[in-house]
Length: 227
Image 1 (cartoon, rainbow, N blue to C red):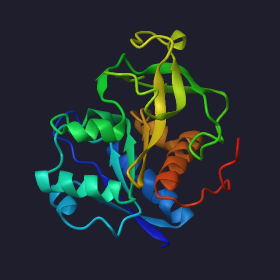
Image 2: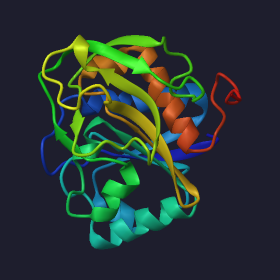
Image 3: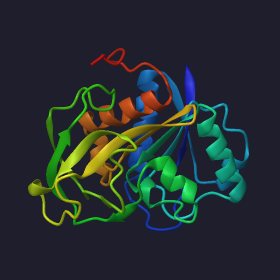
């Protein structure tokens, strides 16, 4: 395999029943695109060097999942050039570690019921979104965040709150973004609640693009276009 990623699915809060399907999807993407995925729920793994991994993925983690040493290791890993990918409930994680909220870009607040809605793709110049239509019909929980990350992150897609019931952020509702952290890269998508999302080719391409970008590996679609 060309590189490895570490997929953490530890939960000390709510546990999504989609986690097995999500891990299987990442492994299938790895088989198809030349990387291996090591899945773990053991916090001791983060107390060992993370340098063997091109990216760390928090896949619907929840609650406090790292030891103090693991927090230090993860922060140093990203600052030193490692990639970090947060999926869905990764925004519901490490509330007691202030740096994590800064790393990710925003923290989860609330969500309405699972329902269909529309994702508005704002930036097609990123591997996670370049294959998506300008308006992407999807079914999810449509997370609201405690703060709007726009201005401190590169927003790739937002939620159209007029397309579903119960939105709480208004007309400017970032949903997918990326940012630089030290020498590293951070990608986050709020999507991915249901197991069936991980069978959706567009969502799998979305996840793959974010992961390859964070890992600084070229996407299947080629280099990012210049704009």
